[in-house]
Image (cartoon, rainbow, N blue to C red; front, side, top):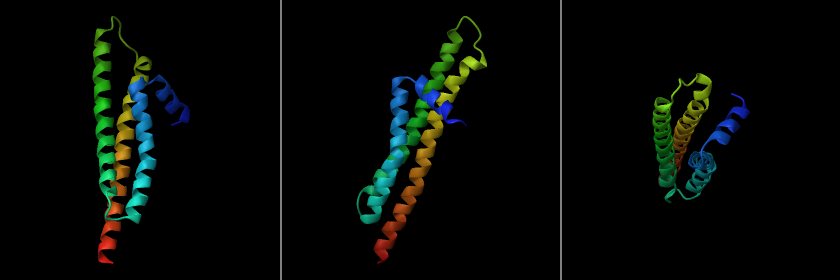
Length: 126
């Protein structure tokens, strides 16, 4: 999918959705930093930070996507005319972006968490 589509999704999103998209994109480097800190201090709180970011991102992505779908459907039902697929596409793209980004960040955090668990096991054995 071309990058222009992602820019159009961001440009057409409402302010709360933009904030959520930026927060989820910022979560990826935050997970990497927490993973590096977990490697340096395996008994520190960083595994929990990684897990919390993953659960929060996945939950918010699905929750906000579902809420948007609900409001979009209610708006379509109230329209005095039939909406076309081209009119619905931006909303569908936005919902897909939020859900997909949330789940992707959650899965990335899961992998990072498992790596951090391995760091803790290695330090316990040493």
